Image (tube, rainbow, N blue to C red; front, side):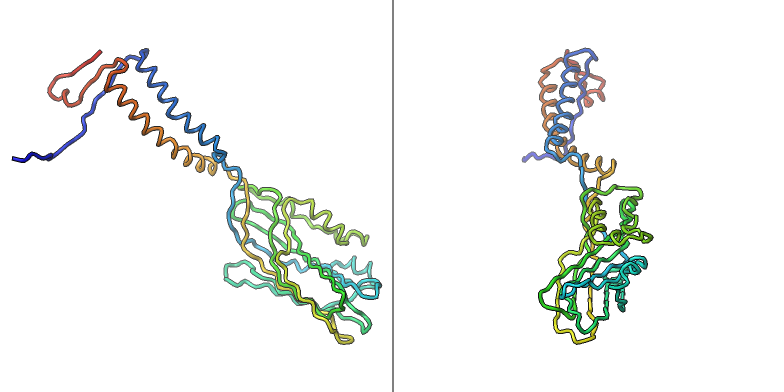
Length: 315
């Protein structure tokens, strides 16, 4: 008659010894080389502590309806200027032209945040004016909310120079974040939420592009108009306005930040355990071999024999 296995179960054995014994010392050493080397291996792999994290967020951006405009003329005379700062306009009264400005921001996906700015500026010109260059400085509110509450006033700068007098300039661009420093993982960050221009200053130099950008580039977090496509159109009719049309998108950003404590622990723990499991498996086999073959002296108790009132002890 054929014989086959119908049931099986593991047998529990307990290995006992005194506190001050070779077996106890050996177990202590095994515990050390089981738990400490994985920590050293993970740490030396230069990825244990997550010093920098990234996430994606749609920033909350709004055009402040503030700008400074300068049009350079071919004859080398004083440029045509206009700004939304009244003191600056008064200082350059002789060069001032009052434009027609249309600004419209759109929420394309209905998430409550603007996705695009459509800006049209029509500057009245004289018949003899020949525009060969344009500079436009735009001011924005910029906010991030997912981790740190980051608020700042930011800029977008448009510049174009042409050897041929123009009738219009069309610009298509993205307002992108530029970081020199990691953002915090919590709290409110308003370091750069101050105005870049003092609107009460009586000096024209305070409103110059050089002065504004000197202060702006000192910041660790800024915005810039990126991937700009510019179309310069020539052939302006006499007494027709010079037109600047800009479409500026507010795309989703990849934000770099300093992870918090629990984020560090979560990331480090996953790496540590993945290596620890290998060491646990290996040294569990080592312990089974050592105590089954009585490499060190212990008292062996078998659970199966306890039920029949008998214990096998080895010393």
